[in-house]
Amino acid sequence: MNSSLTVRTPAKINPILEVLGKRPDGYHELALVFQAVGLYDDIHFTPAESGVHLSVDGFALAADDSNLVVKAAKLFLKEILREDRGIQVKLQKRIPLAAGMGGGSSDAAAALRGMDWFFETRCPEAALQSLAERLGSDVPFFLKGGTALGTGRGEKISSLSPDPEMDLVLVKPKDGLSTPAVYQSGKALMTSGDRARGFTPAAAADRAQSLFNGLEPAALSLMPEVGRIKQGLLDAGAFGAMVSGSGPTVFGIAPSPQGALEIAKWMEGNGRMVWVTKTVSTGIERI
Ligand code: C5P
Image (cartoon, rainbow, N blue to C red; front, side, top):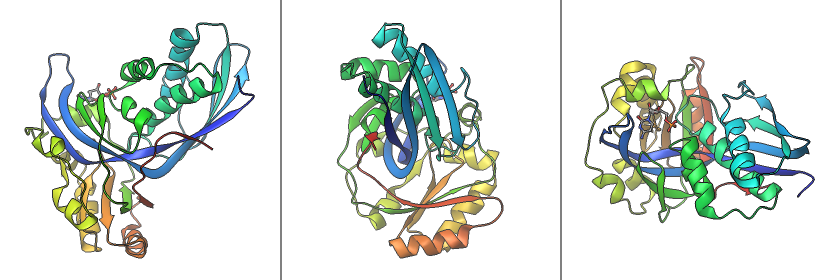
């Protein structure tokens, strides 16, 4: 066992998200492309006598049993470690909540991976994947990172060859959106999944032409500010812009690092949060 360990874990966007239909279990069948981006939460692990003890810095987030990090850590202790040991977890939260950027899922995956490293359990990948699936549809992606295709409810992951690195501007409206509310709005666009399954690497200007999100009409109808942000990004010079996941964050593909900074400046105001970042080919890493 280590005396302490810190990992960082990225946010994601979805260049393509297709909703195929509603499933009998209440979830939606998806075909989507996940892309990791360079905005990170950090998770720091130290030993504890027993139980899971979480503290959160940065964005305010309950540190109780409703927190996905606590759920993931408890699941790991119970299913993998199977010993009466505990863990102290410190979460530095920089990925915004209820944003469509996968922050909670990323933290859950990092808790699983981080504890496997911390306790040196060398847990088989399939076992970690199966715990990840139980924690949420987006969690398995974050065990892999980079660029990946998700199918099923998003939990069946296969790695994809990435696009060349792209400059991005992420803009989140003042308020968040609830993922179930977006899925249940009845406004999702159903498509075949061919766009996601046919994903091949493309340069920024071409990628911008193929962005697609079947949940975008739902996010737009629930929060009109999303439409203003999307138009603003295009007016400011983005090659293309799209809602990420269930929103309400909108990402714009910028023509250059300098272009991204200029677009970001243009987008400020209205209580929005704005980030300049890039696509990354990595996932959870020790720091
Ligand atoms: O899997 P996860 O807990 O992250 O999903 C949160 C909610 O998002 C689900 O309860 C469901 O309302 C919706 N969802 C869905 N179809 C998916 C993924 C999520 O309807 N494929």
